[in-house]
Image (cartoon, rainbow, N blue to C red):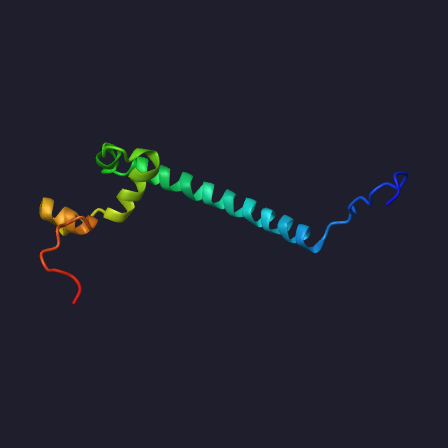
Length: 101
């Protein structure tokens, strides 16, 4: 290339890959909007539930985890008869039987 020649600039036409990327971004934006509305609805339901204060006081739960704990736990308190039942439901109970062969 001679010094007087300018390097070729990329075409301003969108490529197939850039169109695909733009389509993905547009879909992600719609999905993000729906998920945000879903989060707001869960928050509203959680705040109006009688047990929300229990889950909101769990250390480290915060505004994101407290509603998830509430949803996972449910409101059937008879499922857990004490601390051992709570641990079993949460998946943190000690296993008395060895696993594996």
